[in-house]
View: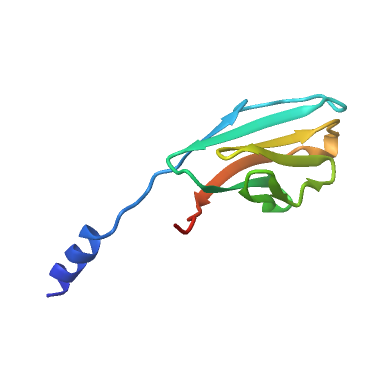
Length: 116
């Protein structure tokens, strides 16, 4: 009986795949250089978008969150700023990076439902 219950649950369970693309995929800069990384997604029409920063000292830190076009919280953090110019895109920018800004940045997305 438990086996058939698990099958029924799995048959009614669906997973939506969201693909995330960062451009450029890798970027190594000299101090004082400007930075722009774009992140685009597909697989959903209304994603929440995020920028995470990873450093050896702090691990993963959520830095920017966006739930809609034109809205990023916070809009800036230290030398970095983020904007969401399109529904499926979020950008990470800096006018001048420093050696202390060294980190790995990850773009992420999650489903966001809009009521009908």
